[in-house]
Image (tube, rainbow, N blue to C red; front, side, top):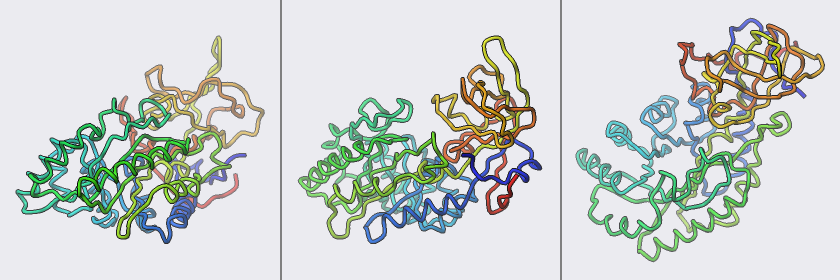
Amino acid sequence: MKANYPINKFKDIDTPFYYYDLEVLRETLSEINNQIQDMPFLVHYALKANVNPKLLKVIKDAGLGADCVSGGEIQAAIDAGIEPEKIAFAGVGKADWEINLALDHDIFCFNVESIPELEVINELAGSKNKTAAVALRINPDIDAHTHHKITTGLNENKFGINMEDMGKVVSLLPTLSNINVIGVHFHVGSQITDMTVFQDLCVRLREIQKFFTDSNIQLKHFNVGGGLGVNYEHPNHFPIPDFEAYFKIFKAHVILLPGQTLHFELGRSIVAQCGALISKVLYVKEGVQKNFVILDAGFTELIRPAMYGAYHRIENLTSELPEEEYDVVGPICESSDVFAKDYYINKPRRGDIMAIRTAGAYGEIMASQYNLRELPKSYTSDELSPVDA
């Protein structure tokens, strides 16, 4: 089954471009809000997945906060109308100007990843006569069982403060007069589909709660990060992730005291399925050992397959011919510019329109101008109402 796209309108638009189905996005956000209603939960959208202003407006209107990992993302969240008191600032290497920007806007908190960072934030906040709200990002040493390039919660990763150093942090805090520790923060990885990983995180969270209670430090906020995966193989059948199962784990295994809040930082699971990269076939090339479909989109528009070996479903929107086997590749002058190898797709012809699905996360945001290519434009379903081809 192919997605219902406005193919007739696609034919009049220069490719490649990103297309976002805002109804899928709105339904996704509605399901999230349905699952967290009446709970002391707050979801921050992870802007690193996609900062398209058209999407940010819909996300802001749904009441979500923002998880930012750069000064640029903080500014994008503010420009989208997201309240500063809902903005968390993470990142292993925060520059002074980024910290100052966050302080000037009085954001909700900094997710601090090291003792040196604590000291720098304290110094910069002091120069402004401000107190910085901080959540300590703790490395839980939990294996997310995902791609090694997107795991973040092991001791070997660069992220967070190791538990072995928490004693040093606690002893240092009384000397940091411009720091107010309000919570702790975790993040174990991305594209996690094994729900037991999140159960393991809850166990570690309870251990951390006890550590701070024993240290006479009362925390109001616990941030479990994000990482919930999506179904790349069957986007038509599973357009919305299983948020019910995801949030159920935290409802069952995290014990909050009155006045405490549990925070989440979801990115991919919010925007991935609403987006597709739309491209046209430039050439169909017969090789010696295999045949190639050469698209006008490449890893400059969607780098995930080249960087991670990631899978994306590819649909030929303008062919009903029998499927044949091809390597689907781009025009970039690199051998790694491949979307899929040995892939079965409806027999293509020059000018056919292809949809590379589940590209709403880490697609447009990671686009580059390598080979001096133009950055892709974007369109939404609000602008292009679906019309049968």
